[in-house]
Length: 150
Image (cartoon, rainbow, N blue to C red; front, side, top):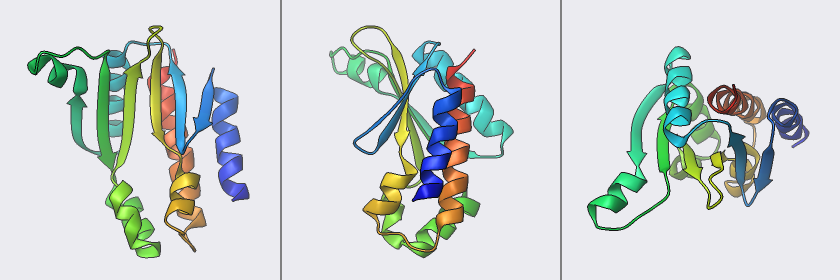
């Protein structure tokens, strides 16, 4: 548990604004939704991550005659990390691969949100994967920082 908090503290020091609540980490972005998602894809590709999908929810809403503020979901992962987590607790597979939700709030602020690894560890009663979760926490923090900052 302490290792997760240290990883989160690392992220909080380097991001201009980080909010953690209800199992989500929310990081303010200085970019638009589209640019933030593009930047995330670039950093993921540079790190050898697999990008499974990028879903533009606002475009989907438009197709059915509805409006939605810019909202995109990027689904990504790496079996080298995900598999050990599933070996520790197979039910965590419901929350994998990783997801990043990039969205604009009612005030026009863009946010980069992702599942807090500590929350997932607790949700799935995961034991024996502390080092893997530490890597995930650090990686997600770095991905968020690169996607959201100047």
